[in-house]
Image (cartoon, rainbow, N blue to C red):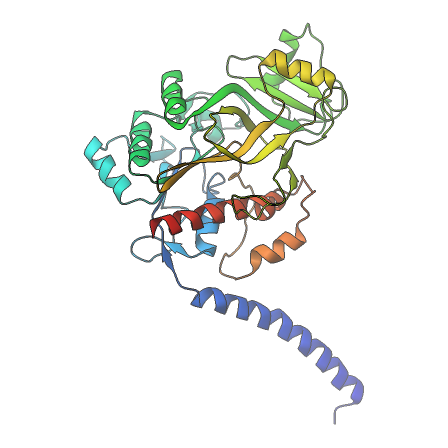
Amino acid sequence: MLTPEFKLYIQKYLLLLLVIILIPAISYGIWLFYPKRNLDVLVIDKSVPNDSYQEHQSIFWVLEYTKFTKKDGELYRKDLDYQGFFPDNSANHGVINDLGKLSDSQIKEKVSGTDLIYLADTYGVFENNFTKGSREDFSKKIYGGLDESDLNLLREALDQEKTIVAEFNSMASPTPKAIRAEFENMMGIKWTGWISRYFDEMDTLANKDIPAWFITQYLQQHDNQWVSPGPALVFVRDDGRVEAFSFQQDYLNKIPLIRTQRVNEHGFNLPEVIPYPDWFDIVLIERDFEVISYYDINPTADGLEKLREMGLPRFFPASIYKEKGKGRFYYLSGDFSDLRSDLGSAKFTGLPILWRAYHLVSDHTDRQSFFWNYYYSITSGIFEKAYEGKN
């Protein structure tokens, strides 16, 4: 005969077990029966040195969660359904599958069957990706950069009024200057030549993540004087010039903030303020662009003077778009898709709400926080708008 205490014990843990099993089961069931929707997406990622798919896995997670599918009704796969570099164990480290061998008519046909083109990363792969070096060090390029076939694709996509999304570094090194100029003229944006990133400590003994080439070039260009210890923003220009803004001396927002109006007419459910510590490029835009979000470093008087001398504005665009008939061109001027951790299964309805509550917006050290609080919202919104435009 069961004692009252044992019955209470069973009831307590039975309820816990039901919560652990029942809620995920319901969540999965809702996702399973949610209808699939066809959205033909072409993802271009030239920076895939290994099977982590770091630069585009975020895109495919959002596509799977929202149940946007290929023409055949199958879900997208991050290891197959992109164009660019496909790593393997061969002597060449991988194979290239891109638009290079397509004729103009084939590119036109490809665009005709596509609803959205996403330039995830064009930086490429380098010899040190397969040795002990890192992406931060100079190395011989294996593959990367925009080329003429990419421009033909984008030009045709604009003509056919398709949705285009491009991210940080789409037009920067190693893209040739002539190709970059064509991209800028076509899209209506101008790269200033500067990219920037936050470091929480500039003491080179305490922080081994500061690239060696940056240290060397900064010392050479600044009379062998190094940056004050503590947080800083580093700036790198495409001609090799480097600068650094010290926290409190040159700027007051310790970590660059991405700001979005509380009530925005663009329809994206984004936080008003979120820190962003990773690489971003600084672009100038034509007047027909709408600014969704912008970077704010809150420069001091000294910082403003430095920005003017560098030819940079007070605020930098973070997420922008302009309409082109039924289509839109979006530019995300940060390495937003880059995600170094696994998000787990996308087949549970309600996960974004759960994880947005769990991952603090203010925690810049938590890379998933940016995904759940900003990236998922803007990317899923872009996909939804492209789907609405298609139909």
